[in-house]
Every structure is written in C-alpha cells, then in structure tokens.
Image: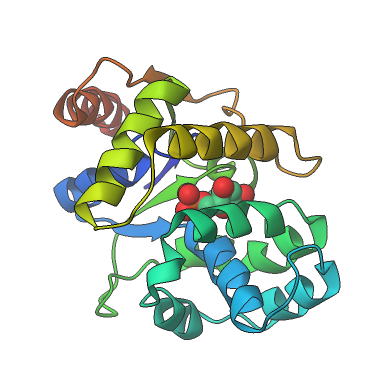
Length: 219
Ligand code: DC
C-alpha cells in the first residue's frame, strides 16, 4: 500500500508519517529531504540559491547515500535549510531530476537497514498529486500559520536553536507562499485526499483519524 501525506511546513506530517509507518510496518520517505539535500549542497559549495544550473547539476547527481550523509549536518534541518530547500524546489528542472528517485522508492520500499517493506508512507508537498498519484490513501494535513509557527518555535528551542516566534512565523508564511504559488507541482491537496486541519487536534487524535481511513481502505 502507498500512503501519501502532503501539507505545509510544521503541520505535523512527519510525526504522522512516522506513527503510521511504525503501526503498519511500512517504509517512510520524507521527500523534503531531497530538496534539503540540494539546498545544503548548494550552500556548502558557496553557490547562490538563484543559480539554477548548479542546483540542477547537484540534483542530477544526488544519491540516497549522499542525502543521508548531508542529513547529519545541523543546517539540514535548520530554518535556513528549510528556506534554501524551498527556493531550489521551485525550479522545474530540479523537480524533474529528483522525481524518479522519489517514485522508484515505491517500487522497492526498504527500511533504513535495507530490509524490504510491504508498503510506504510518503510525506511532502506533491506526493499525492505528482510523485504517487496512484497512492491508495492520501492525506493533506494543515493547520493555521500561527499554530505551525508555535510548534516549530518550540522544536527549535528544544534543539537549542536561537530564534524568535515572530521570525519563525514570518518564515512559515514565506514558505507557504513559495510552495503554494510555484508554477510546477505547487502544494495543494490531491482531488482524492482526506484533509485534516490539525490546529486543535493532538497528534494522537490525528493518527487515530488517519488509521480509521487506512483500515477502512484495507477492508
Ligand atoms: O517538508 P520539508 O520542510 O522538509 O520541505 C522543505 C522544502 O522542500 C519545502 O519548503 C518545499 C520543498 N518540498 C517540495 O517542494 N516537495 C516535496 N514533496 C517536499 C518538499
């Protein structure tokens, strides 16, 4: 089974995807990682984020191994990492170069240790619309920008990253704007996606609702 979870930054996609992959024993592909990897590699090579040709070259040569190596860098998950990922992800050629890598994962999904899995949970912005339009179950998870900024701000504080709530809120809004309005594969719910607004739900409540949808589909 293929399950996709799309939605804006800090809506709770990652936690839901991880809960579902554990419950059903499915592999998990956080597709934001491919764009974060390209953005970080650009940064490490001192490239300007507007340099589309360099971003394309990096995307064309990206492997899973290199992506996981880059994920160890503190800037991979930082606010700057998210911003840079969002900028390079708006380039159509970069998206095209990274599409097959994401789609192929569903053909042979594997856990982190290489063991084969019987299904996969994707999370991202276009996984239900572009990466896996054939997915059996699709979710679109959202929440108000203020609630998402508050969650992300608390995460940063826990990690010891210095920032302010206002800065995080501005970043969340700027990313929403960029991710929703780009020409190629903009963030939007698939026509057949189940939409959850998690503003006033706990992650357990969201997980329970999602499991109901999946269990009904499996029957
Ligand atoms: O989910 P994330 O915060 O790690 O994603 C970082 C950026 O990558 C996001 O702002 C937009 C881009 N992205 C995308 O365009 N398509 C995806 N499927 C996943 C992420």
